[in-house]
Amino acid sequence: PTILAGDRIFADKTVGKPGGARLWRGALAIFIYPNDRTMTFIKRVVGLPGDRIEIDNEHVRVNGRDLQVSATGDDGRIVRERGDRSDYAVLWPRQASGASAAGEASHFIVPNGEIFVLGDNRGNAVDSRRFGTVPIADVQAVARQVWFSAHASDGVRWRRIGQVLN
Image (tube, rainbow, N blue to C red; front, top):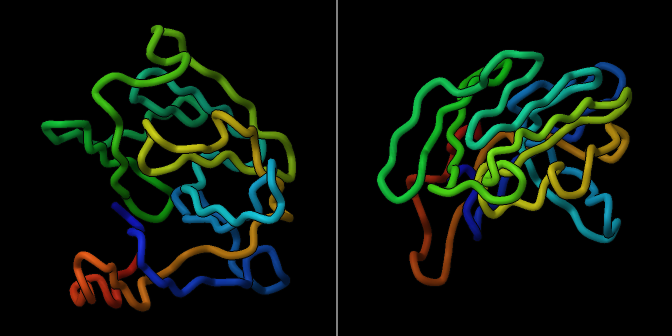
């Protein structure tokens, strides 16, 4: 769980601006949802312009390179994947959904000026597998750190405050 309900985050809003941050594979991009421009989504950047993405069961390959580093977990699969700057954890269900569950691999080529994003909860995510690529111009920020975290059932989650988001 990279970001939990009730998390308040610091975000770098200089993405795509002169002298600002550039997007990288593994970044947590905050962007305008392509199918409803009144909504804002946050997803993991997996592909940059020109990248070839292949998704086969719980394996994601970018330009022929498997992102998976290791896997653990009992009721699902917690998989460590490698981004450009650091590793991050994602959750795959025991039985993958969609085309991958039928044993078919999905292939995508990221167009110029766009990115391919996936949710960290891969079995339940609404991401580029469903709505396609996201224009870089619609990326508003990159999530960096948890500023505050609280939930009605947990109260203040003190150990999450200040956590750097990978």
